Image (spheres, rainbow, N blue to C red):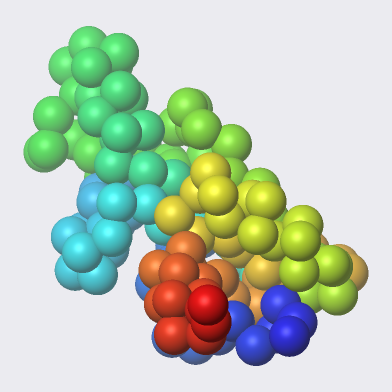
Length: 134
């Protein structure tokens, strides 16, 4: 078993880019029903993960920011409160499992940090639940 066996590919993953606005991020999160979303640069390189909590903290800490002005805030200006680590596609399965213990999903990248997709903790748990033998 390797990391690629668990990969939910990029073309099936909702993500935003570093050129997105706070409003676009919120709309994307709402549409896909996720609580966090990968952020990629214009070359597809994994930049980080933005969460609903990050958006809420930004609203709380920015006087005058409202739903009507969120389109003015670039996502790259929003502080990320949790660091979501990515894993290389060729890494050991144990490295990915260690990250998945603390993250709902693990972003997967190639050697140049180009985003390939995610591994969802849910899929890992379902796999091991189906394959556990006494």
